[in-house]
Amino acid sequence: MSIEVIDMSPWAGREDPEPDSLRWHQAIHPLADDTPAGVALIGFASDAGVARNQGRIGAAAGPRAMRKALANLAWHRHGRAYDAGDVHCHGNALETAQEQLGERLEQLLAAGHFPLVLGGGHEVAYGSWLGLARHFEKPPLEPANEAPTIGIINFDAHLDLRDPSHVPSSGTPFAQIAEQCQARGWPFRYACLGISRAANTRALFARAEALDVLVREDHEIHAGTLDTIGHELEAFITDCDAVYLTLDLDVLPAAEAPGVSAPAARGVPLALLEPLIGIVRDSGKLRLADLAELNPDFDIDNRTARIAARLIHHLTLNG
Ligand SMILES: N=CN[C@@H](CCC(=O)O)C(=O)O
Ligand SMILES: [Mn+2]
Ligand SMILES: [Mn+2]
Image (cartoon, rainbow, N blue to C red; front, side, top):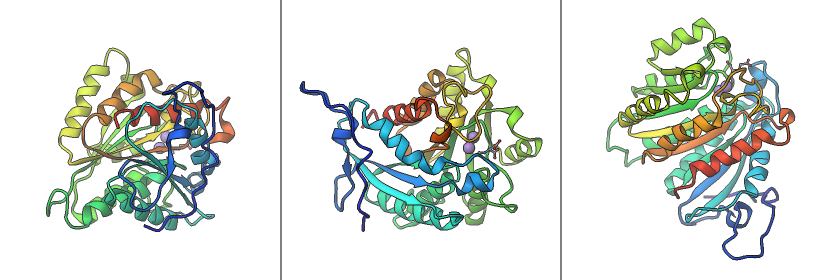
């Protein structure tokens, strides 16, 4: 794999003198050829999808802000972690950037890494999925010679199922993936949790129903329903060969995560998201994850970046 020179400058932080006190910035290394498998962070520095979707731009700065917030978190892992650099979206060249992300992810997956993509607007999801799809298309197929059932689990205030025939954007990735699945004869399996009914039109709910999406609205997710929704998630995962997890930070209440393009008026608190994300993490089927929509321009005291970092810590704790 040919690798760019990776900017490791965000990886700085506190250094404790006593033993066994590592933090992420001391444990992570730039990705190099032939390194043993590990978690591979890759940035998708893109504002184009949000700009096309009439949103507040700034998400291109998300990857760097996430790395800086993660740098100082305590290192509790045993496995390896790498920084695989960034894919940049230049201007409005979103489709090119998504293709490039797909290629890089295909390479990371082939090398046995667990790729974790740092967005970028939620247009990152289409590039993420392209990488996983290419991985499954390449021989030997997983499972052999069969259409893979890739389950997409999205925590989001929005369905992101807008009609891409208008303009592909941060609001269309899962409709684009549904189209790609249909073209390939692959099943489309999509679960979207944390949806705000007030922030999604009837047309979007109708498309979700037509595509048989598992939808759970923000108000449905509370302490009393957590077990039930966890079981629903487990059943969804059972029917899949592989899972792609995508975390749109606007699923959180705006007070917890103000630094996004389209904040949620209600949202689902981190305390409820973490156990659900833990189910996905521990399923044994998670092959790829991304975090989307961090916009540092609207963040307050790095709250949203800190949540993103904590979610990365949470997702990678087992390795
Ligand atoms: N990725 C974001 N998607 C949302 C944005 C909504 C908004 O800007 O208000 C959507 O398209 O629905
Ligand atoms: Mn989204
Ligand atoms: Mn959203």
